Image (tube, rainbow, N blue to C red; front, side, top):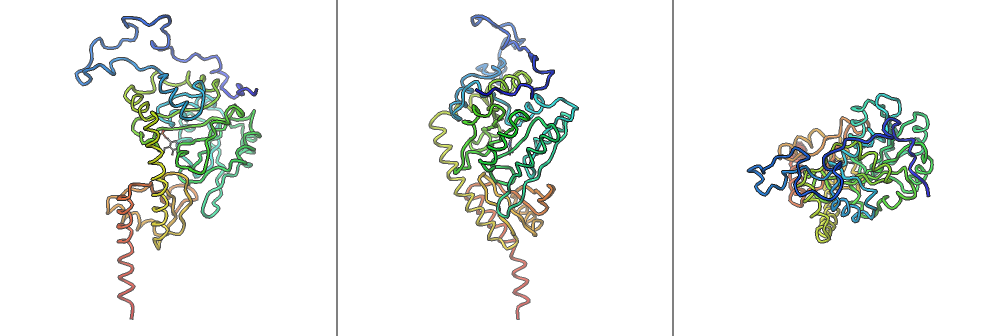
Length: 374
Ligand code: PMP
């Protein structure tokens, strides 16, 4: 059985115990009277039942178990986090020595937080741009492997389906990359949008085969709990433990844990599946609506809950949408996306509103043409 390549963890953190909280350091049978955490003796009036008077468990076992069951993982492979954002930061801090040359590899266009975490931590970000293949983006994973070997990067971040592209990583190529980098780097596959990729599959079952693979999951997208801030690192138990020791003591607020737990009950998951299927159908409608707009040059295939488009008329589209009080994401600041907008899949009514706003957009030009017509 292959083992997690421990040498990829920062040398100074290998024997690091982390913070010993009141919750984690109390041993023996449960106490009757808890006076070890400097909590208030009486509840706040805003919390008459006292449901949040005490610090929460650092890794609440029922949620960890439910999340593991949902993903087909073992509980020891799951580290709950304050959104996958916190897991990203934890991986960078655990694996990359701060201020060193051992940084991360990203494949733009991609989720911006990988580079932000690396920058805050003081390690370099090596970019291996994706290739625009017309209606989808493709990763150059051969170049990723070369870059890791050349730079000594400790972490590779890939998102699949990717934000903002909506494209997925080729499974065969990812398998090859994992084989190439077994001793060199942790390969993080961010599956934030995995539920929307109805034709795809998760890489959680592959963790046993590839101990240097780490998967990120979140309750923020398909489960509809972005405001609860619940995500997870799913990885080899050894990596889970060491990132857990780097994590702040009580990452998950008790009300968020309760809500996430309810959202992972079987009936709630069934409901989520139905919402995801409906979102995928509306995604196709939104893509068709955008493709039908005369100013739109490209609509990328998407396996996520958003669509990326290119338009030479992005300015006028944005201002029409803004006039209709519709916010979409302007991606034009990103290299290679100087004409791109990202639109999340809304409700049918919200897509109707986009249709109306963009129809208005063409009206003056059409009117102009008609005036000029003989
Ligand atoms: N990964 C990707 C690819 C994302 O797009 C996002 C959010 N936009 C995140 C992670 C962060 O998710 P969370 O809400 O779990 O922190």
